[in-house]
Length: 147
Image (spheres, rainbow, N blue to C red):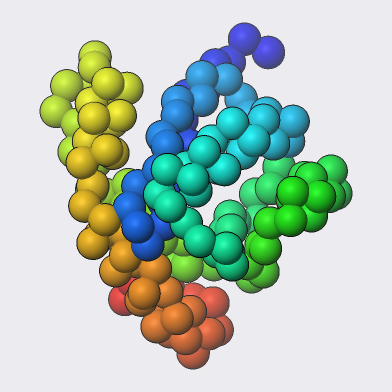
């Protein structure tokens, strides 16, 4: 197919934003694992994450393939279990709102620059309020919450 898509992949933690990369083609499981390999651990190191951190991603099919799950297990990543429908649980969706590009022709550069400027306190707040969001989603049986 001649359809080209473009999106971004990103890492963040309680210590701030990690790497942001542009994905210029349709992502599959192999590409997802390569992106994790090249960006997740370097981000964790750069953010000085200590042992015991938990990796979170949603139930996108490329995240849940047997091969991807096995790859994560072999790398000894502790992965957060994710509910099947979770519209309000992915804190990175809130973080995307921090990017405010003004010029569509320079979107990639602007996003890279703005991503690096996101204060660690914003990331910290998203991580620290996660339990509250989770409780709210559970109380609403998976339906939309105030988050």
